[in-house]
Length: 334
Ligand code: UDP
Ligand code: MG
Image (tube, rainbow, N blue to C red):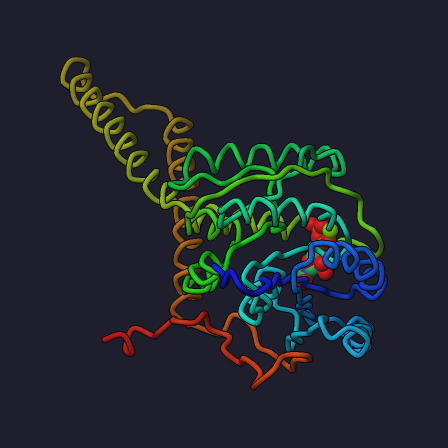
C-alpha cells in the first residue's frame, strides 16, 4: 500500500492497436473522471504495433498532458502482452487496465477506487449483462465458463474482462509469473488476494472496429484451458483404461464362444468400425498432447513477452525488461 501521507498514484493502462479514431474520444472521457478522483494519475498507453496514426496522436497528447505516457512495442504482440508491458512500466499504487474504445466505461473507475480504499487488493469490474455481444458470443462464453468451472483448480470470475483494479502487491505478484502464454484472467485468479466486484453495463464500441476475430477467441479459450488444467491429459488415462477393459471382456467372450461353438469368422464391418474409432481417438489424444507439448516448447524457448521500441514520458532509462521481473533461466537459479 502507498504511504498514507502522500496522494496515491493510479496508473491507467491502455493497450492500443490502430485506434486513431478512438484515442481522442477516450482522453476526453477519461481525463475529467480521473481529475475528479483527486488522486495523482498516469495514463500508460501501449502501442501494440499500430500502423496508423495512433502513436503520433499519443506523442502529441503527451506534449499537452504529461500524464499521458507511451510504451511503443516493436510490433504487434497481442493484447495480453501489451497489457503486461504497460503494467511493467506503470508505477502506480493502483493499476487499472482499460480498453480504449470506452467499452469499459471510465465512469466505473471511482467505484473501483473506493473498493480499493476499503482494502480490497483486486477489484473486478464485471459486466451486468452481455447484451452488446452477439447471441453466438454469449452462448460460447457461457459454455466456456461452465467448462472452466468444472476443470480448473482456481475459479474464474465470470463476465469480467481485463477491466479491473489491482493493488501494487497484486501487480508485483502478477509480474513474478514467468509464463509466456499469458491469459490474464487465469493469472489473476491464480494470484489470490482479497477481491471485490463492481458491476457495469458494457457499452458498444465508441469508434473503430474490433481487433478480435472468432478464431482468436477460440485460441484464447484453448490457452485458458491448457493454462489452468491438466485434466484433458488425464482424461485419456481413464478412457484408455475403459477401452482396455472392454477389449479384455470382449476377448474373453470370443475365447469362450470359440471353445463352445468352434471357430466362426465375425463380420468385417464391426472390425473396421472398431479400428477406425480407436484410430480417431488416438489422433485426438495426440492432438491434445500436442497442445501441451507446444506450450512447453514456447515456455522453454523463453523468448521475451514483448519488445519495447521506444517510450515517451517515463523518467530514467526505458525499461527493456521484457521478461517478468524475477524470471530466471533454470541455470541462473542453480
Ligand atoms: N488491442 C491490442 N492489441 C491487439 C488487439 C487489441 O492492444 O492485438 C487493444 C485494442 O486497441 C483495444 C483493446 O485491446 O483497446 C480491446 O480490443 P477490441 O475492442 O478490438 O476487442 P473487443 O472489445 O472487441 O473484444
Ligand atoms: Mg472493444
